[in-house]
Image (cartoon, rainbow, N blue to C red; front, side, top):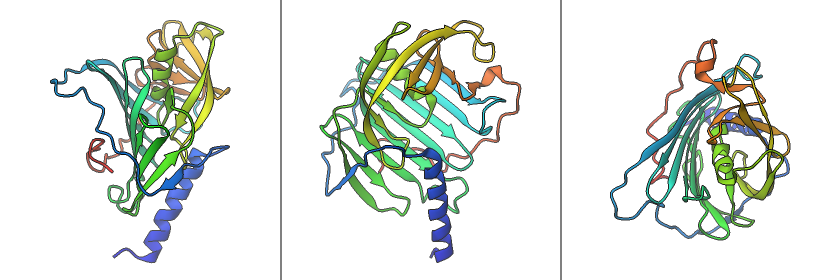
Length: 272
């Protein structure tokens, strides 16, 4: 049996992590008794043939305030969908993410598992959330760190994009919009980085291209979200870094942080 001190310690760690993630101006999701459960959005009875379109390894550059962030991503294409898999490692909180998109790069379904490496039992106390975006309103099923299950409704229109742990997630919105310099796309976006996920009206803006050898040998695209977060991507929409200092691993000569264990194999289809 866990002691009261252990329980309070775990609560403190979660609050510390959530304070880091922030929740400025968010609209809280609403608890409900149950939600509509749809099948995982695969391609039906046909044998899936996945093509890897892109993959990346990003991490904190020498000028980034937090020097311990590492991100891996992989984008796969099947006959009826795209699947983006992201892992973002941070010593106080690590997130595993899977998002399914239709062929227009619009999100259908998302999943997130957050573990605290400093917790006494990260796998047992994982925070796991499944987002159903094919219903209106969108819903979330949540396995709390204490193991209990909760369902929530997320007020707002059907999202055209999502923002989650990992900068690479924004690459899918960039791919969907294909903006020219000076153009802006606005729409409802599910932001599930915060303590309480919410759907917000957000602008994606294309800024003039830049050159920076720490990012790429070629000119790269610059987009901003929320009017302040600048993200760098190549012509296909693959994220290369951001203004805060995230950079491609292969362009850094600083040491890679020690890897953080996965604490069990992520299981998007069957959890929570």
